[in-house]
Length: 277
Image (cartoon, rainbow, N blue to C red; front, side, top):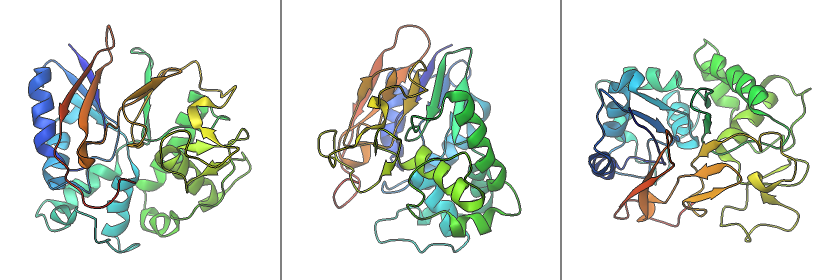
């Protein structure tokens, strides 16, 4: 059995199939981890979502910011934007089943036996994996509850920017989501900065890539992430960043997690207009 972590697919189904062919992926024997953002900006969001869903327990995916945007749009909490390309899901005859499945995906996946965790974007320095898993569970419970639509209406916003265990209600849930699905840079205290989206070195003074903050409590853990296309395929301090910019004309990459860590990538044609986020 092989276990592969795959970077952000974002609706690019054809490159995903080519990558799996190159890996000689066997759905009976092998397993896939997806770093989130299965959908949006690429041309085949519904096909990607169906494929991963149909893999059942042979695949695990964490929620990314684009996945949450789809869920928010589905209940009318935000309007679709010009660059959104998940209309094929919203118009699909199996839309309800796909959205229900997506609502039940985790924010953070932890496999103690394999010795890896996976989250879409990252973690603030105050959280170790035990606390992060517990906090992710707080959001996951709301996503599958009758309070789902009400939370979607309150999910967007950049405040609060600094974690406190005393945060309550929607502010607490919003911070957890923002961290796990949007973080790139933070300061030494863990204060989030969302405006900077470029490669390390382009950010405002006083901020660091989240994984470089000295003394972060998750530094002993091996963590797989996506989200940061400008960072690219990047391994540092036991963080394995796999968003190699497929939808922007880069590559779609997979990292084998069991045994020696090996990377396999396939080139991708640009599938999204505009500048990369």
